[in-house]
Image (cartoon, rainbow, N blue to C red; front, side, top):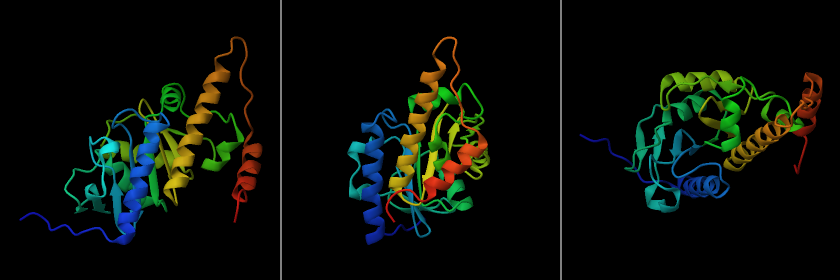
Length: 221
């Protein structure tokens, strides 16, 4: 007998609306093409996640898709994203409440060139330090999830070799902002590195540590 699935409660319905808006923003801002990439948010022990292969502009409140932390579907009938193992691994291992995964152009390009994004800008500190590149593994596999967890150790974002980016945060807005910042830093490094005969200056560990401390108190409280 098929598992009985419940209806979304008020918090889940609101979170789904925010998730859909964030997913649409990744397309509008050029961070994904078509249905590539995915977004999720945790509400209690339920993870709401974009469904597999459905254009974000077609998603409605009735399409809410959710699983528990073991991956069992508890909301909706649409098949969750193929990257579900990666999302669940991050939720089970970190304090993340939201995740944004993209195939952003500049970040994906950088993932093919280095094992760690050079410290080109002090906003590296906002992600916990130099951004690591998770080794390549096929999408949707436990191997990729394991690689991502190692790359995220002490970080709130990483690159996925020949694939894209993953960032997390305590809100969807923060996870998205980190994605956008990571893509911008990758673009800066690629641009600076392309000048013939010159190499970009990089920040030292001490400079990054100081930036990280300053950024912890940045903004409104």
